[in-house]
Length: 96
Image (tube, rainbow, N blue to C red; front, side, top):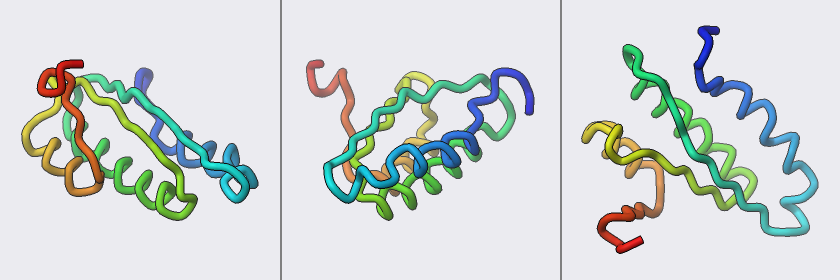
């Protein structure tokens, strides 16, 4: 794996084990600030990780927030994110 890769698979291997047992008794929330380097097809990799995360979130009733730098998100990638997330918050539009 190239150095600096955001290691998508490690997240999906770690997260279910981390919340196993907890999600049955309490509400579990997660927050992720997603960083990536410029590389070919990075949006495709990120969208794949979002779809895989969506499966885990739905299976575990996890409340999850993913934060992206809006200046680095292409219009196409933003549309993809909106297709698999229930909410979109933009700090500039919301006065945050």
